[in-house]
Image 1 (cartoon, rainbow, N blue to C red):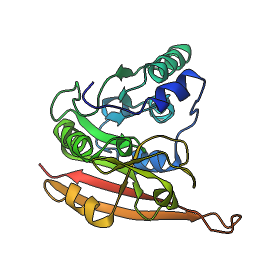
Image 2 (cartoon, rainbow, N blue to C red):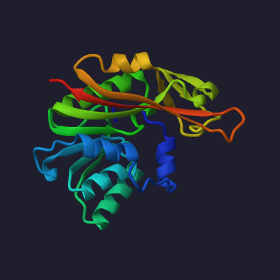
Image 3 (cartoon, helix red, strand yellow):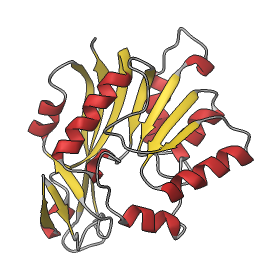
Length: 226
């Protein structure tokens, strides 16, 4: 394992936490950005930190060639069972997204749906470097990180390497260590070797609470240049 993932995720998955359906942003990304000049079974999609595999389950059902890497063995075991029960094919591996066990220039699309934010800056950058390595030139990366305008950042304890822990309030309370990323930092991450196709800061304000908690995240699509 190349990085130290927060043990809260293995605990959650071993106790029955499940994601059963894909995230809407991932569905849109896959359909809008998959190459149209070859059949779906030749379009290779990788997800880093796939959890219990809901996004890859969707992509496999749609006929794409899917692979994934996930730190939690309990999550991997569940995803593999689900694929097997539904006769779906996919390469679902337990391991580290800072050391991807895949060939260079081998994927058309890579998905991050709130996984890279679970590690600090050193591993965050290393993971993006590995994603750039395994993406084909012209391949596209769905990046979904938490924004530094999120209310949960105000109620946490610094943990080193950009991470915070012990989040006590907001929509991210109790999810373990996290990295919150500024606009400048996103730019720095994708300055060299990438083309920014889109970058949105999406914010939700909880108006049912008197303090108006804000949940904020980055939704970016980046293309590997060469």
